[in-house]
Length: 182
Image (tube, rainbow, N blue to C red; front, side):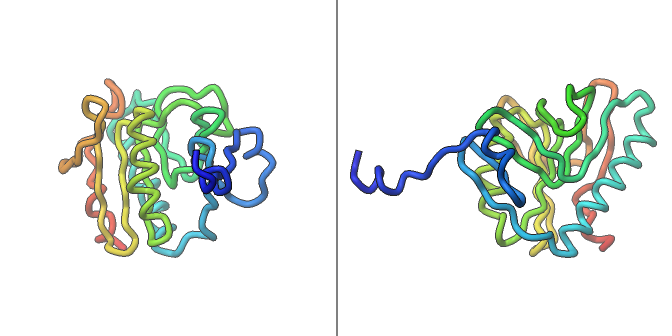
């Protein structure tokens, strides 16, 4: 190991450390990431609109659906990884009411200049490895939406508006055009 590796190797942390921190943080593979200050208006608008519209779709389409949408709910993946996606859809029951411990079926990250690299790389790979079926990246700068669907353990870009959340719950939700109503 080179001397520079010994001097500049960042310390790794655990969920127990995370619980003691002040402010908003995420922890990925033991490495802390400070979250940005409060989101800009377009970020908040997209998150609010997504939650409202997908909840309406779930109520209209799937009477037996156990899926729910949440805004900024911690997902404790393991002892070394805790993330707080902007929006999640979870189906079925979670053993804890305060945070998620099982992979959500759908995650939305509302990307800005300060989070773009992490959303497109770190979180993309993390969510893919954890088996999140749908990953949506909404770009506040370009007012675009990209949807990725997990197929054979790899994300493929999706172009249609159909989301099969469970065997009992499939919705047609045009997330691509949400920015048009802003």
